[in-house]
Length: 262
Image (tube, rainbow, N blue to C red; front, side):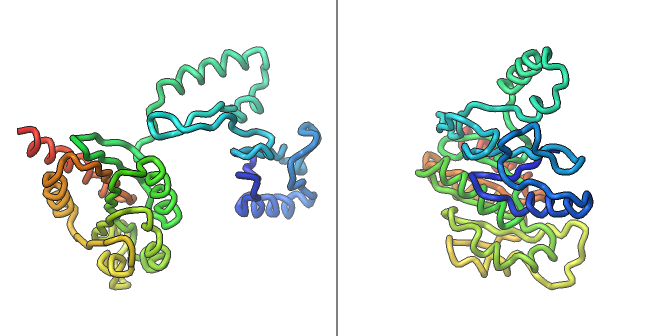
């Protein structure tokens, strides 16, 4: 079993809870630190505990982390799982070479800071984030990647129960954006027994400037007008949510192309 126990040198609460559960099941004590002898650090009969992350305090960590011209990071990768599970060491180099080949062609994960396209100064992205912690993290990453660009976020809340439970956390999650548009809630499987709407979330966000636009179609139309007024202005449109808000980006790109290139 490979467990992320440290990240940036800090103990992961979730991993610690998992280890406590393993101790209760196995009845044995599990070492919670970095093992001095990896071959002897076992957690009962469940397997080794492996630490990994960015910090050098981990057994396995990325090295030479540096920003690249694409706005991301380059680093030396260690494929821990492959090293641990590869029984035939003779095939290890062959396997790593295979991974290197495929990683060189990897263009990212769908709905994970996925780029839909660029037209003039407008860059359109989409991300699946629909929890306050996810929203805050992706906006921090977006601000780091685009420090000088206007960051306009379109957020579709996911489920009414989720919005009721997390509205206060959402209210402070958008601080890295320059402007936010909140749409109607993607109710998914639920009936709105709480009588809550996206308008309630929009009203709770003190900063940045936030607007409530119920319909996704109206969002596309509004953004088309805003971007077309100054198409060379460097703007990042980032749609967030677990529902059909992902359709906004392609439709916006198409409308802008029809308007600005004709």
